[in-house]
Length: 395
Ligand code: NAI
Ligand code: MG
Image (cartoon, rainbow, N blue to C red; front, side, top):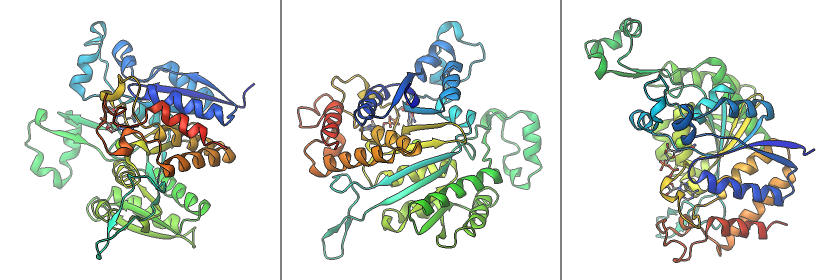
């Protein structure tokens, strides 16, 4: 009997290219696991009216550990158009399966490490006054509240009457009160104290475990006084339990500017759902972008690990595949870390570090050339060659 059972959900597009490569790597380091395939994504929506079928939910509920590739999601009208004719007009509504999964299993803590690999040509560099350059080492880990906020899914176009009436009780709604229903869209930003507490607590725990000196709560409490206000309030309360770690508070807009000025100043960053989504992509851009950005969605029982990139449909059909599998590898590494296989974590990270530093094998994104059928002839490594290079450096 293998020690672990991992539900693998390649999903759509390049998810099908990078996930199998991560499994090659996990097998090579001797991770004692059985992998159980589960369906998710666009085809499930088109053919079943549900991008996250019950059978996949059951597998996750049973085995608790998931590796996810990427899915394709489309705006409402395009999603409706994709539905098989026999399912049309039957009340099916498209919901992002990954957002649904996070809510279904209360995967409320999203961890997104943004760590520089020395020698990565995509690392952020800063111009010095004397004309030279410096390359600040970024060691940021973003904690994003994963189930609430503006992604809670509470939204309407043409809100029903009781919603309009409730809104009308707020004096600030007055300027909108005469807008015709079809011209009025509302998305609700929901923050609960419990979730605000959990995410800030998780951020401080991480800071303590990995020796970070600061936690930054990145919100907008001066304007979003209630929701961001509650996030900040809870962060201040939690901070009292961690005397050795300072709490900084920044506004999301200013933060997106500062992070390109002095990214090395930041350690653990915590934010609500949308802001965490934004700020983690922004930090990821300083350390290699989507080809390097991994994440973990952690709940009380279930945890799912995924690269933050999407299905990149324009590259999905290329043979050989050209996308960078490192984000997927780093997601697998996060899974290993989660289950306590720290020796394997070290071996894989070290192998990736060597490959990046040597710079002999680089996917198209690392060469800063356009992706496409010509990338390989221009010297870019394929997805598979990148995996082979990392495998060759495992000790
Ligand atoms: P995307 O992340 O799929 O691709 C954006 C661009 O980033 C690509 O064109 C490519 O240039 C680059 N890229 C992404 N992954 C890469 C990798 N591993 N190596 C090298 N380059 C890489 O985002 P896009 O194009 O906005 O969305 C495509 C589809 O993916 C949409 O349907 C979207 O809804 C979905 N999506 C799904 C996500 C998920 O499954 N978690 C997250 C983001 C988007
Ligand atoms: Mg995102």
